[in-house]
Length: 340
Image 1 (cartoon, helix red, strand yellow):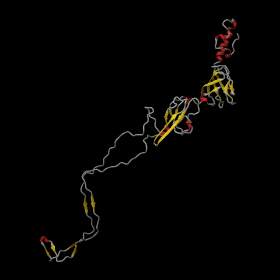
Image 2 (image 1 turned 135 degrees about the vertical axis):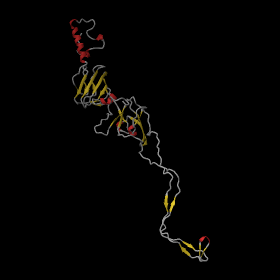
Image 3 (image 1 turned 90 degrees about the vertical axis):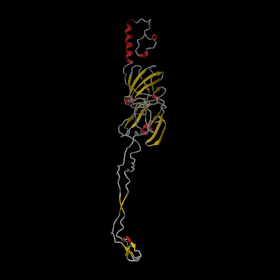
Image 4 (image 1 turned 45 degrees about the vertical axis):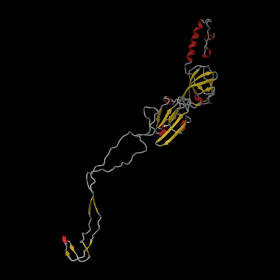
């Protein structure tokens, strides 16, 4: 009945562990108690640093290890026992290769960054599975909700955008034909002309609970976001209103006008035939038909009076002003959405 020295000396079946129920223990009982206490403690301590290697030798005891030294890609872990769980922290630049022996999130290889962490379980003989991989600098992206839309001023130097290669999350940019989306969107449709553009796409990312959903590409549409009635779209509009206005009445009035000047001139008239005498009514009569000119009035004009039109108004037309869309004072921004 040997005293165990490692968790590998223990069995999940009570009857297979020492001492057996019929074994006399005497003064050795304390040795078993101390051994079990030490084994239990060693399962939850930080272990010694591990050197990366094609087959990473993870000790059977210890809960947390630093993996360092850039040597060769890690393709598998040495077996411990089924159910063994271990947390690892990595130096930068160590490659973890996905395989049937080392199952990684999304079935993708991972190149570690400094202080990345991961949790692995020895799933079965020869098989370790990564339960969770976390980039040291990705916590801010992990905190976003699935379906959350948020803005980044991407025109500014140093502005951060979420990475699109993490196995832990996936974002899309709500812009048509953008390489950032890298296959995460399909069936893109853009129609209309500015400012009335309609742009949509379908999420094509099986790991996302939003897989198959249609989203509006609001960066391409250049739409504003409005609270309430999620998903409802509205076209540009101004609140219905009227305009009032009148032309001022000039009251009853006339308009003055003048004829053009004919210059200095005379007018001729023909004398009537007959003796020089005064006829009835004091009208002079003459004996022949000679033409006689009237006296000149000099250069002059004649005033003409236009009849009054009475009190009236005149029609008024208003010229159009403004641009092709109704919009408030604004600045452009780029919207992203988390889909996984």
